[in-house]
Amino acid sequence: MTTDRSCLCVVLAAGEGTRMKSALPKVLHTIGGLPMVGHVINAAREVGSEIAMVTGSGGEKVDAAVAKLMPDARFFRQQDRLGTGHAVLTARTAIEDGYDDVLVVFGDTPLVDPGVLRSARSGLAAGADVVVVGFRTDEPTGYGRLIETGGRLAAIREERDCSDEEKLISYCNGGLMAISGELALSLLDRIGNDNAKHEYYLTDIVEIANDDGLVVVAVEAPFESVLGINNRAELAAAEAIWQQRRRRGVMLSGVTLIAPETVYFSHDTDIGADTVVEPNVVFGPNVRIAGGATIRAFSHITGATIAEGAEIGPFARLRPGAKLGEASKVGNFCEVKNADIASGAKINHLSYVGDAVVGARANLGAGTITCNYDGFSKHLTQIGSGAFIGSNTSLVAPVKIGNDAYVASGTVVTSNVPDDALAIGRSRQENKEGRAEMLRRRLAAHKSGKK
Ligand code: UD1
Ligand code: MG
Image (tube, rainbow, N blue to C red):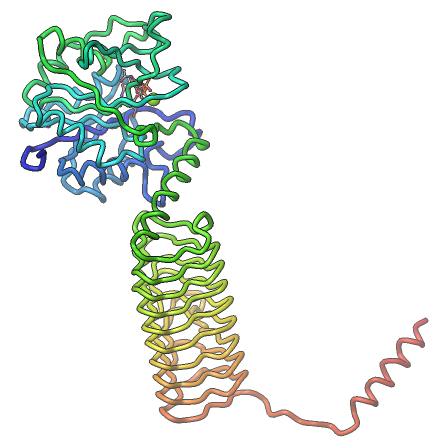
């Protein structure tokens, strides 16, 4: 087992990522709402590894994002981009601390699977000194080729340095590597730059280790797990693979997705069993849903907490701070933000409820609007339990509606309503007998006079 062995994961992210054509560093582009490098770090953390981050010029943004995800990560700056071997050595002081295993991964391979890292580490635990993660492809152009002899890995040859015969090899270097921590620095320090690009290739440690009579092996991984992202088309392709994996995981955990390919998850979406998600639903970050909820079609949910049996949508928008109690309902064309909706409360049609507390079983009629913002500050609306808010009501916050109070349709509520009171704030209706007929005649005459 690898678990009782200590491990340092060196994450390389000093590349410039020019093909992303972006002001944002490449590894901060997201998959499932989490920066690519976050996925890599999570995988490393899952196999019990500490992190050494290697970034290049302008790496401050990357460091800040990584520090949020992993406060005890250590950071190293590679000033000159002299190759992957050189990049690993910028983390020398971390490696010197002495780990059993040193993993090297790339920050731009977001689909890296903890299982692959585990199998690389298992290789070391089983006695290998260097373990390289390889993959097979029909299109090996651009990748380093794995040159094997008798079950051992003899060398990795970069494309530019390959002979024509070597170029035919379809077993390629995925970039991930596990190195015995005890030997790592002595191997890395002997890497030279006598190659087509005059770079210090990490991959050269394979030959160096073999010359020392050490054990070097390759383990095979699925192509996705080492898929490197260089441009936005590849980013979208990786997102698609990630979403597909997540949908499957969610379904296997007991959630029904009627049209899984149309539902988009965030990396941290948490949904309980027996929830049903209809087609075309988007989950933004930080959503927690207990079991047995129903999310109807075309809903967009971010930063919301949803209790057992709640019903959302179709066409609902839940924004950060929306908290829905048990069996509550937020229906079509409703937006809820920073609002605590207690159990059994209903906001069924065409409403905006923001900065509010809604009591149990309260019923908000169609077109109920909390006027929460005065152009300077946000204010709270409190609605008591069992209150009934008639359609087309504006609740001008700060305002409080008592328990079991009743607000007549069309009211603009500007002052508090006591418990059990009825509030009506609209002009009284007047009926003028026969005046419709008179009006019609006058309008008709006016129109024909114009012709
Ligand atoms: C590398 C491997 C190649 C493998 C391929 C898999 C080497 C020499 N080659 O090639 O065998 O098939 O990945 O995708 O390792 N980086 C730095 N500092 C540097 C250079 C690179 O931090 O000085 C980082 C990059 O940001 C990137 C990673 O290392 O995350 C790989 O660098 P890249 O230039 O993409 O290497 P490849 O040529 O693709
Ligand atoms: Mg690359």
